[in-house]
Picture 1 (spheres, rainbow, N blue to C red):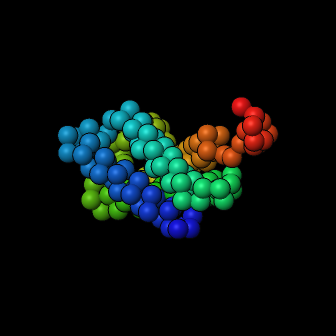
Picture 2 (picture 1 turned 60 degrees about the horizontal axis):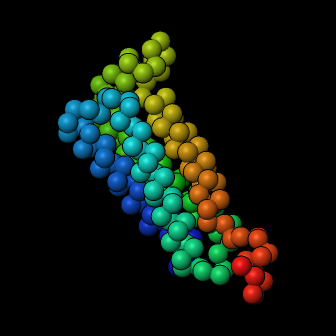
Length: 154
């Protein structure tokens, strides 16, 4: 299974979990609480981590830094794009008052409409994807430690 298939699977599942979390929080009328967005980062982090881990399991000895990094980046970017698309539909069509409520409590004096919120969510998602992928690849990258590759050495 190629990087793109793994990234597609995990990116779509991660986006679905993000959307489900948002809708559950909305169900309890807590969707305007900015602090609850912290769990979005944990959801994305797990999606990226799981995709890289699965890629390493599939490729075994062929796994390298590039394969893991591209899998993580594609997974996170896809999840972000899908989630931003959902938020665009939500803010422009389902709850047009939502962006104004957020802007009044979050970014006072900078009311540029829902577009700026979508931009912020996208940049936040892309940036956290890159940082998380680089962090997780420190765990998953193949070791260059020669003592581990020499037979008979501990």
